[in-house]
Amino acid sequence: MPKRFSSLLDKSAMTLSGLCIVHCLGGTLLATIFAASSGWLGHDVHLIGLALALPLAGFALWRGVLVHGQAGVAVLGALGIGLMAISVFAGHGGSTEIMLSVAGVSLLGGAHLWNLRAARG
Image (cartoon, rainbow, N blue to C red):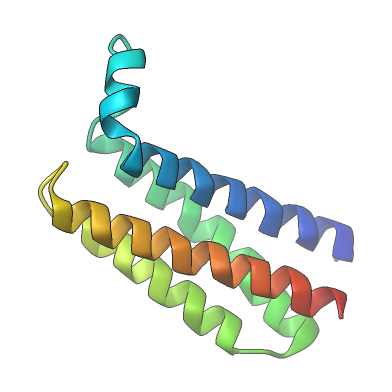
């Protein structure tokens, strides 16, 4: 698989992580702006985000480890996904959910950035 495709996967995953952080931290502002969003800001968005993140992160990070051999990338990504999964079971909108979600997507985004840099170098 070409490096360009692997790079695109990591960049897509990092974009998804960024969108998650915007969702988590900008809840009040976004709730006002997107009041008619039909649940875009509801708890189901976490399940959808996790369902998108699992295969994208799994494939991109696994592919990266095969290319550059740095298994820590996958460990950091797995930790991020794990925190994201735990946050799904926390009460929606509570500080525990927000902290777990932000920590999880930050770790996962960091893993993708590490993966990108390791594959280049």
